[in-house]
Length: 394
Picture 1 (cartoon, rainbow, N blue to C red):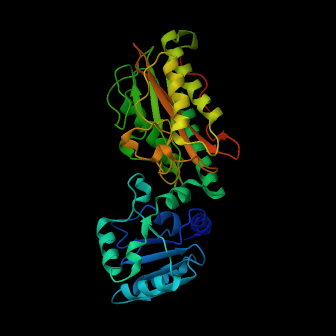
Picture 2 (cartoon, rainbow, N blue to C red; picture 1 turned 45 degrees about the vertical axis):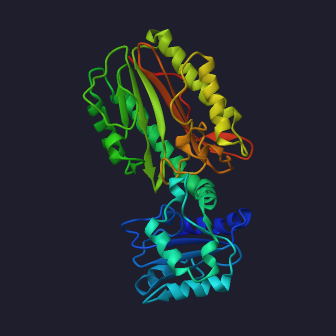
Picture 3 (cartoon, rainbow, N blue to C red; picture 1 turned 90 degrees about the vertical axis):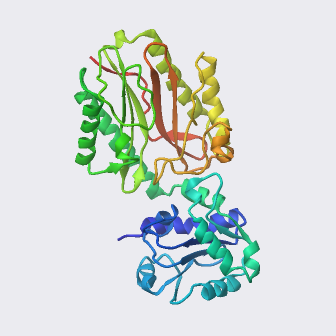
């Protein structure tokens, strides 16, 4: 097994710790086959059985304290400068290393806002507090939310290439769909065709197979995280997809709109809705840049939609994409309570976001699109080929 990607991510950690004024990042885990901290796949790629401490100092090399039986596997990764074994208890070894490093701030993986930074279980938190009870370190624990957000969000060259490939495969399957979707097919039949294509491309699914792809036919199906039905595709109706694949552990997430009829048959109501969605996404893409705050980007698209007479969409404009379709960190969303502080995060170079929104028509249901973008030094670039026109199936 290669750990080259994890090594790329580990090399990012020291700079992030210095940037965030964090002396030590402590990833504190056990029995990760049952409860894995989301960050492990980034900085380790394996599993642990006993209580384990992965320690990343801002001035120094990373080290791991692990149970005897995990030592050889941990060393084999080549990710840690030192691997320290223990047999009966990790407590004394942990305190000894903390005393040696002397951190004034110890970041651990809990977060009120970001699920990707909230990998420390409450039980393990209590155990850590017990171990540190007789030391000054118990009062030095802080949230690693910012550290984890930056680490997940700043995609390396390898990560970007894998996401690009996932996007390309997703678009290829959409091209295949142009040929196989027909009037009279059910959502379930179309869904099964997509699953066959995923298997042929030898990739996985970016989220749960039960609703990937989402297939929404006709004016009465509400978009969301639900699976296909026996609704049939009819002439003059819209067909919506929300679909993403996972290529070498990295995801895509795209939405596309089909119309069953010739381009000249598209009703004005549908065309106006499509153009509003398309142009709102482009307006946000034209505006977004490093240093922008998440809710500011959402506001650009949200106001665009409202100014054209539509009700605002009931979700965030964009989330980050990476090892998960929803990869945590800064959200391009409104300042609603349900999103916590994530819309107040800052957009950074190397972030990969979706730009997605919908509007609702009176007679034809919802119209929705979703594109994937990469944040560059001055703006962004589309990783997907933005859908400019409805895909018409005569």
